[in-house]
Length: 201
Image: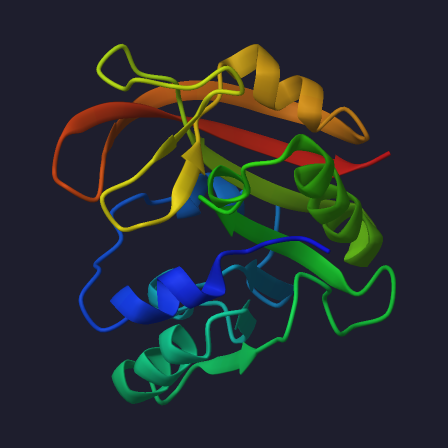
């Protein structure tokens, strides 16, 4: 079973404010606004709300933290948010035109579990659809263990990636584009993140 650390996220759901943001203009260049879009691991739904503001209307956010989803429903009552009991996506294969996966793999410390999540993402993505996967890049200021993970101040064990490492983990999907860009951590520190666009092979 994949450990999404939902208990730890539930404890900080009312206080944490996420900072990592996808480039929605880039996403829109691949996924039309009338497409069906899933924000996988949506937290309290901030990116779903950004997608709505960008013109997307068929948007759903799912997350394993019931507390995060409850917060999002209060903040964004116009957005569809669903609490799921585990990492599985409750839709048939080939359902979504586009997916946003923002700082989800970074919260899953074990490689085998990340692989299961990537397989699930690939399952529900339509052929020709696009997933925008956005994860934190490794940083010289972090003391990682042998697997590249570390205990965050939130009580969540996190994983950071090199660009090549993330691309390798996504090798079951077709890589469209991958770039490293400046980003900000939850604590406000300056860092970098990897923006990957992938589609189903």
